[in-house]
Image (cartoon, rainbow, N blue to C red; front, top):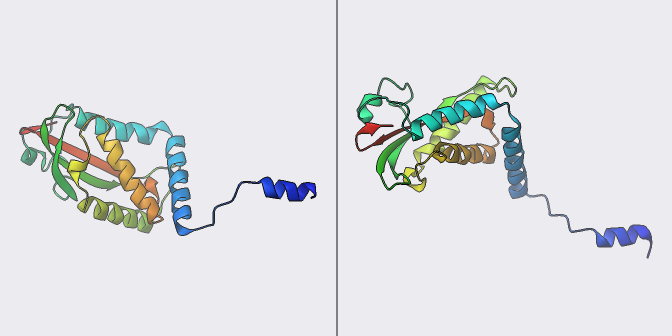
Length: 171
Protein backbone atom coordinates (compact mmCIF):
# COMPACT_ATOMS: atom_id res chain seq x y z
CA UNK A 1 0.00 0.00 0.00
CA UNK A 2 1.36 3.44 -0.98
CA UNK A 3 1.61 6.39 1.38
CA UNK A 4 -1.28 8.13 -0.40
CA UNK A 5 -3.47 5.05 0.00
CA UNK A 6 -2.57 4.80 3.69
CA UNK A 7 -3.38 8.48 4.25
CA UNK A 8 -6.70 8.14 2.44
CA UNK A 9 -7.58 5.05 4.46
CA UNK A 10 -6.71 6.74 7.75
CA UNK A 11 -8.68 9.94 7.06
CA UNK A 12 -11.90 10.38 9.05
CA UNK A 13 -15.12 10.03 7.06
CA UNK A 14 -16.48 13.24 5.54
CA UNK A 15 -20.22 13.80 6.01
CA UNK A 16 -22.36 14.03 2.91
CA UNK A 17 -23.40 17.57 1.94
CA UNK A 18 -27.09 17.95 2.83
CA UNK A 19 -29.54 20.80 3.35
CA UNK A 20 -29.41 20.13 7.12
CA UNK A 21 -25.62 20.36 7.13
CA UNK A 22 -25.74 23.60 5.10
CA UNK A 23 -28.31 25.05 7.54
CA UNK A 24 -26.12 24.14 10.52
CA UNK A 25 -23.07 25.65 8.84
CA UNK A 26 -25.01 28.88 8.23
CA UNK A 27 -25.98 28.91 11.91
CA UNK A 28 -22.36 28.44 13.00
CA UNK A 29 -21.24 31.22 10.65
CA UNK A 30 -23.96 33.56 11.93
CA UNK A 31 -22.96 32.88 15.53
CA UNK A 32 -19.28 33.48 14.71
CA UNK A 33 -20.19 36.76 13.00
CA UNK A 34 -22.34 37.79 15.97
CA UNK A 35 -19.44 37.18 18.35
CA UNK A 36 -17.06 39.10 16.08
CA UNK A 37 -19.33 42.17 15.72
CA UNK A 38 -18.39 45.45 17.25
CA UNK A 39 -19.68 45.83 20.79
CA UNK A 40 -22.12 48.55 19.67
CA UNK A 41 -24.94 46.17 18.67
CA UNK A 42 -24.35 43.93 21.67
CA UNK A 43 -24.46 46.95 23.95
CA UNK A 44 -27.76 48.07 22.41
CA UNK A 45 -29.30 44.61 22.75
CA UNK A 46 -27.94 44.09 26.27
CA UNK A 47 -29.02 47.57 27.30
CA UNK A 48 -32.57 47.08 26.06
CA UNK A 49 -32.84 43.57 27.46
CA UNK A 50 -31.02 44.33 30.67
CA UNK A 51 -33.07 47.40 31.40
CA UNK A 52 -36.34 45.65 30.64
CA UNK A 53 -35.48 42.45 32.50
CA UNK A 54 -33.99 44.17 35.52
CA UNK A 55 -36.82 46.67 35.85
CA UNK A 56 -34.72 49.74 35.20
CA UNK A 57 -37.12 51.11 32.61
CA UNK A 58 -40.22 52.58 34.20
CA UNK A 59 -42.66 52.67 31.32
CA UNK A 60 -45.83 52.92 33.36
CA UNK A 61 -47.69 51.14 36.08
CA UNK A 62 -49.42 48.62 33.83
CA UNK A 63 -49.09 47.06 30.40
CA UNK A 64 -51.52 49.63 29.08
CA UNK A 65 -49.14 52.32 30.26
CA UNK A 66 -46.54 51.04 27.83
CA UNK A 67 -48.80 51.72 24.87
CA UNK A 68 -47.69 54.90 23.14
CA UNK A 69 -44.36 55.06 24.99
CA UNK A 70 -42.80 52.12 23.18
CA UNK A 71 -43.55 52.49 19.45
CA UNK A 72 -43.42 48.73 18.80
CA UNK A 73 -45.58 47.74 21.80
CA UNK A 74 -49.07 47.97 20.26
CA UNK A 75 -48.15 45.95 17.18
CA UNK A 76 -45.81 43.48 18.90
CA UNK A 77 -46.16 39.98 17.43
CA UNK A 78 -45.68 38.06 20.69
CA UNK A 79 -47.58 38.45 23.96
CA UNK A 80 -47.80 35.96 26.76
CA UNK A 81 -47.11 35.11 30.35
CA UNK A 82 -43.87 33.95 31.87
CA UNK A 83 -42.29 33.34 35.26
CA UNK A 84 -39.25 35.09 36.69
CA UNK A 85 -36.45 33.24 38.45
CA UNK A 86 -38.10 34.24 41.76
CA UNK A 87 -41.43 32.72 40.69
CA UNK A 88 -43.15 36.03 39.92
CA UNK A 89 -45.79 35.81 37.15
CA UNK A 90 -45.36 38.41 34.44
CA UNK A 91 -46.89 39.50 31.15
CA UNK A 92 -44.21 39.71 28.50
CA UNK A 93 -44.27 41.29 25.06
CA UNK A 94 -41.65 40.72 22.36
CA UNK A 95 -41.35 43.03 19.37
CA UNK A 96 -39.20 43.15 16.25
CA UNK A 97 -37.41 46.10 14.74
CA UNK A 98 -35.29 46.39 11.64
CA UNK A 99 -31.79 47.54 12.45
CA UNK A 100 -28.80 48.71 10.47
CA UNK A 101 -25.34 47.44 11.26
CA UNK A 102 -22.89 49.43 9.14
CA UNK A 103 -20.34 46.63 9.19
CA UNK A 104 -22.97 44.28 7.72
CA UNK A 105 -25.19 46.28 5.32
CA UNK A 106 -28.51 44.73 4.32
CA UNK A 107 -30.81 45.90 1.52
CA UNK A 108 -34.30 47.20 2.28
CA UNK A 109 -36.07 44.22 0.68
CA UNK A 110 -33.92 41.72 2.59
CA UNK A 111 -34.47 43.64 5.84
CA UNK A 112 -38.24 43.62 5.23
CA UNK A 113 -38.16 39.86 4.60
CA UNK A 114 -36.15 39.31 7.79
CA UNK A 115 -38.57 41.46 9.83
CA UNK A 116 -41.54 39.54 8.41
CA UNK A 117 -39.90 36.18 9.16
CA UNK A 118 -39.01 37.25 12.72
CA UNK A 119 -42.54 38.52 13.35
CA UNK A 120 -44.02 35.29 11.99
CA UNK A 121 -41.74 33.28 14.28
CA UNK A 122 -42.68 35.37 17.32
CA UNK A 123 -46.42 35.11 16.54
CA UNK A 124 -46.22 31.38 17.25
CA UNK A 125 -43.61 31.73 20.03
CA UNK A 126 -44.62 30.51 23.49
CA UNK A 127 -43.43 33.22 25.88
CA UNK A 128 -43.82 30.84 28.82
CA UNK A 129 -41.03 28.68 27.37
CA UNK A 130 -38.44 31.27 28.43
CA UNK A 131 -37.66 31.97 32.07
CA UNK A 132 -37.51 35.71 32.66
CA UNK A 133 -34.08 36.84 33.85
CA UNK A 134 -31.23 39.00 32.60
CA UNK A 135 -30.55 36.55 29.73
CA UNK A 136 -34.12 36.07 28.47
CA UNK A 137 -34.01 38.71 25.72
CA UNK A 138 -30.69 37.34 24.43
CA UNK A 139 -32.21 33.83 24.45
CA UNK A 140 -35.21 34.95 22.39
CA UNK A 141 -32.91 36.87 20.02
CA UNK A 142 -30.92 33.65 19.48
CA UNK A 143 -34.12 31.74 18.70
CA UNK A 144 -35.18 34.41 16.20
CA UNK A 145 -31.68 34.43 14.68
CA UNK A 146 -31.75 30.64 14.30
CA UNK A 147 -35.06 30.92 12.44
CA UNK A 148 -33.62 33.62 10.16
CA UNK A 149 -30.60 31.43 9.43
CA UNK A 150 -32.89 28.51 8.54
CA UNK A 151 -34.59 30.77 6.01
CA UNK A 152 -31.30 32.10 4.63
CA UNK A 153 -31.92 35.61 5.98
CA UNK A 154 -29.33 37.81 7.71
CA UNK A 155 -29.42 38.04 11.49
CA UNK A 156 -27.93 41.53 11.25
CA UNK A 157 -31.20 42.98 9.93
CA UNK A 158 -33.41 42.41 12.99
CA UNK A 159 -33.38 43.20 16.69
CA UNK A 160 -35.83 41.89 19.29
CA UNK A 161 -37.29 44.12 22.01
CA UNK A 162 -39.01 43.07 25.22
CA UNK A 163 -41.44 44.72 27.65
CA UNK A 164 -42.27 43.15 30.97
CA UNK A 165 -45.11 43.80 33.40
CA UNK A 166 -45.18 41.91 36.72
CA UNK A 167 -48.10 42.36 39.10
CA UNK A 168 -49.20 45.48 37.20
CA UNK A 169 -45.77 47.12 37.38
CA UNK A 170 -43.78 47.67 34.18
CA UNK A 171 -40.20 46.55 34.56
